Image (cartoon, rainbow over all chains, first blue to last red; front, side, top):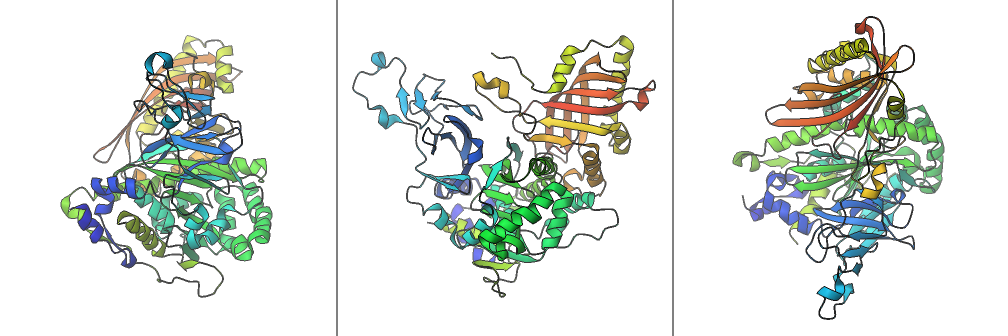
Length: 423
Length: 188
């Protein structure tokens, strides 16, 4: 099937999703250009850096970038590529450096990506050469939102917070709960899933529906023997036309108990008392107390589970491969013993060996296994579930939303994706 | 080139301790082979019995670093690990596998553990330190194939009867910076 016929066959508003959007190489190549060079992408968390020259190597789509803390406290990001012949400037995952020297011919770049030195310049440069024109390709737009560092290749992209659209109300409710904010625990879990990145992103945007089935084994392992099987939560699903979305559970008592069971007592105490009180004061009870994010995704590829404190980027590696990078996020204000509980429990639930994580990846890989043949690739998937509300009838929440078990946010995700792909 | 720096207390303990005798080496080898056999045969209940109640089971993350920063190659204690488990956590993972709804292990992995390079050192009374290398082959479904390589630093509580030895501590040195597979849903 051609790219055009796959895209023409898509009707996101009515939940018609052609399978080819996941499996087709041409679609993938196009989305790297149309989606990933024009959207805000998560690069790193502020707390990963402490001294000038601290750097972190990551990806924006398929493009590798270095994020570096500058002397003035700001961040710069630039393509990890020498302007001479293109070798990578840095192979380390993270570290501290005053400069990055290309291992091929030795051109040297400063922490802002500026070209500082050309090897044997006096011998090889015959004419006057303006080094400034040969700096590493900069990421032109950067923004820090509640400690999360984002970058965008498109100089004309809407400002980050504007690009959240109506989902900002929900996102603030998750990331802006305390004055002190969040930090990450050292290290990033990294693994490879043989699936398309959109399956993961869409699930985190819109899908609590899978929880009782996909994660049945994880839940049963935690609950006492003979306990009733888990039920789908009540609450709202928030989303915006910009493609962001998440599920917000309304049953506070359930989540307090779930937190105590899966994370630990110290964390549950901090979360349900200290943090909630502060969030109530900052955001009001609708977000501070009533709604807790069970899952969310900022378009295109940043997922977060507030209940399990795992923040992850779905790095696309091809139509059939995701490199998942998962950070563990904790509140700076949380007591040390609560942070330790988060570190251990997130590893157990959603790390490389996580008991919930594994069953997600397995199902995404299963979807891809059905998309190898021409008939399987031609199927239209159905993403029409939900009440199709766009506002909370109770008026308790703001912005666009539906009941929590819904695919409204998925339809918004695919709508945004389709719009970028066809414009 | 900087030598590998494994910043864990257990490696210090290995360096400071003397080699065990031939009998201890023989028994430790038997225990490790027995453990590998139980895991490869999915005899998890019997494996769980080999674990001490105060078990700590760790596998730190490993990263690519600049040459002059190689001493930071492994995450520090207090940072993220692939595993940071006590016996209760291992038991929880095994309960999950027993539900028949653990989709990532249904059908289950076929594994083969090759254990080698065994080093046995005498520690305090009633304990031996056992170092080993392990190569784990994992095959699953039709096309899923993975090979995981690691070293292990163990503390075993010993008894006269080797069937009663219990694992009190295991530190797993994983040889990949990125897990080349969907999960680490098996044990090392």
